[in-house]
Image 1 (cartoon, rainbow, N blue to C red):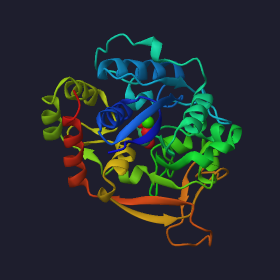
Image 2: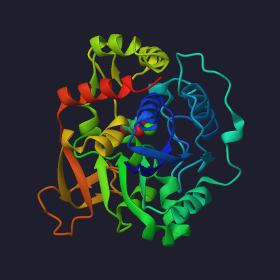
Image 3: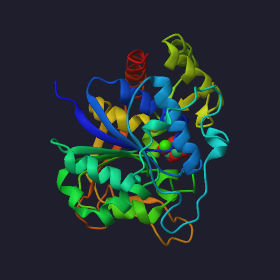
Image 4: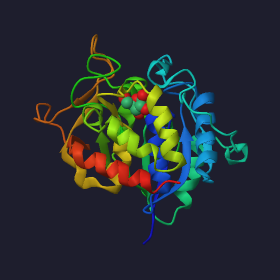
Length: 306
Ligand code: BDR
Ligand code: CA
């Protein structure tokens, strides 16, 4: 089976770490490049975390460092959810710095996309600054991108503002550029991620699955995305789950815009499921997920890790 080439844009981040593990150990995906962007914590920390994860996973995937701040907005992190370093709770090995490219993430993405014999899928599980810069600087890449499968936005309420989700609200202008890119976009938003829950009994099972499972267990103890007792929210794994097991999701094609100027709602995704705006659909939005099947899929995927 030919593997599907993907580039993952990320800000590890505890839920990012799990999404990366599942993608890197899946038989169906070829992770050609990982790019980092300031988000959950600073660019330096998320890049270090990515390199540490790769060393721990024993995987050699090139990493390129991207934007250190949003296009216009001030940078505000989510260390309240992921801990000060972004991945607290586990003693990771020292990173293999040789995996870090000198190229900027935007240039590395361009090169990998243009050189790929098969169209590449972009998987942003962080704020969209790098992807927006890529399209602004190198629009020719669009010709060899299959689709964008992203975690971000919300068809419900928010976690950064009343209506706004962190990955979109951190850099709303970038998100708007991505939704207007003309490329096929699949949005797995916050409302769906809130139903992608891992319970204590799952966590105990995962703990026994090998060193990645044990690491996950320790990160989960520190993660504040949901609660260890009542369910941890695996937001970023939803994007990877969509790639590997789309039947977990209910999806609707619709128009998505980003509110840039709302005095109370700036940074929210306006997901026009009822067609009030009379605009052509520009995205496929996950409107539901089968939580039980997701848990089974998640554990099955974790079993493939070392
Ligand atoms: C998103 O924000 C980050 O904190 C998580 O890693 C996820 O990508 C959820 O809103
Ligand atoms: Ca993330």
